[in-house]
Length: 345
Image (cartoon, rainbow, N blue to C red; front, side, top):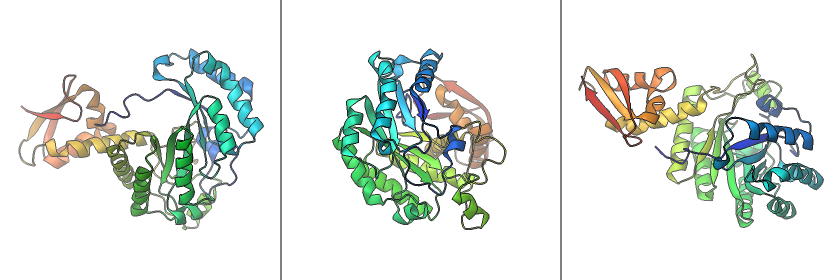
């Protein structure tokens, strides 16, 4: 298994839903996704959140803690708003409680003056909400830019010395498996520092919900979405591009009944993808059908959840593939990652 995801930086998010966004994309419902309102976060609220994070039991200074402004188009905010947000974080950066800041924005809002402003503060990473690099898909989703502008944005951010993240969505209107994997290849060519992958969900109150009700849009089912996402992760990480997030994080509002009308929602979507990749990797090490009636499996201790899969679906997959019964899964701290051993009874 790739070790690129073994120890991510500790990120403390501050949401600014839709702030600075010049358009409302057909799938967008930031308030439901984040459980945050569109109000601008005042300095006092930012300080409260950062204090809570620092005092939390899970806060670890050795994980290079970052402050992240998510949900809006940061570089399209008024300069006075950008300064207000970053100034609120300054004491925490100065005291060494946080190492850096990351922001999310659109690829068509690269203002050199504002990028220089970000660089003067502690912003080190800029994540671009790219979603797709297929122009017809971007047009259908009302994104308001073309793929060529993404290429220019990535180049400009690298020239300013920022780490670059790219956020993508699978299952968008007008997209296909082939189109999405074409986007993945274009992202590989851009060589960002990280990627996030999100399946498209149909949320009430969006234009996409109207399309879904009118049968103008067909959402991806869970299993095809997991397989497509797994293929994307495999290709990205084969080119040393870490995938730092797979699937939306749960939020109280999003989990309320009726808040997801369609789409491949699963609270453990990322784990399903990782487990799928794991089973693809170990398939060649499994015994051929008919070799045994029953056996034990020895695996690296930390990979027991991956081989078991969600609710033991991984073990059932192995049993179906081998025609055998798995008596037990034995963890071994000395075993190399991605290796398994079949033990006869």
